Image (cartoon, rainbow, N blue to C red; front, top):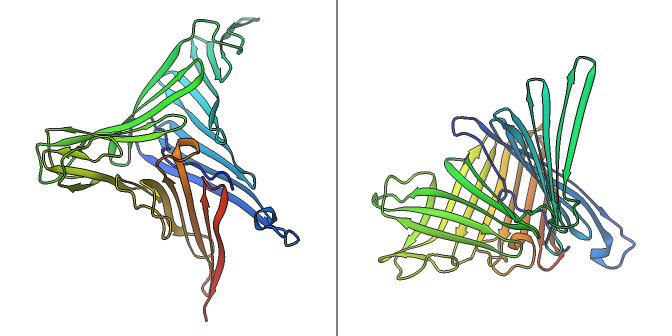
Length: 366
């Protein structure tokens, strides 16, 4: 298997206001078929899997949609839709996980003023750009519509150079900023960060954390500020060292070294966890060679009994796939009846491009 279900929440892009309630929802729809006539194990398995994760805050919804089949990780899409003042906005960003490469970015915006509707549709692909401006309205028996097209989608032919989008939004217990940039060639980078992470017992020092994504790489850095306070929200791995700052070198402040950061919070019925360890050693048993992972999990009642689900995305330094994703580990359990529990697990090493482990089991009690 060449690909895997993409990162959850780096995955989650967000925009909103800290006073508004947030929710984390989604689904994982997977069908696995086995052909016993095939002698080769990989050829005997066919897979059809779709993972959708949506973070909703206020009037905005941010969605990650990942598609996987037996040939590998075949599709990755990010969507955002919401309201900004009088404007309605929706945007779709598509990647090809195989290369990896940027495919397209399309953004639509609309507003209605004094009975006249105005719209803008911006499209950026790996070959060019196009902008369509539209307006329409009705005056008595007269209907008027106007569309103005700039660019033909072949190249950057209306002096487009670069667009940089800055966002600020609440996520879990922190205020997060994000910056996404595109140029004529497509996707440049996406950076996410938070400011003012407080270390307990050192009220004079605070830290800023930043995650930077390019098409081929992913990096993490910590920046110290002398403004410590009460420890809240984030957990930090603190030890004594002499140098550092940007991954993979731990941050050093005098004799203080911070070699990792973690966050766990509940968003509705879903628990989000993010862990970074400069020394690595993260991963399930037998795969402890990853330096960061994000996971979502839930534990709720289904129609028949308790239902549990967890999905973890691990990042490997020097990984070959989109955003340095290295390993996918997903598990579910459903108690169908008091005496019967069904469970399934799926582990995929993205860089090896094969099923690493797939388990299906049940427990009968009497």
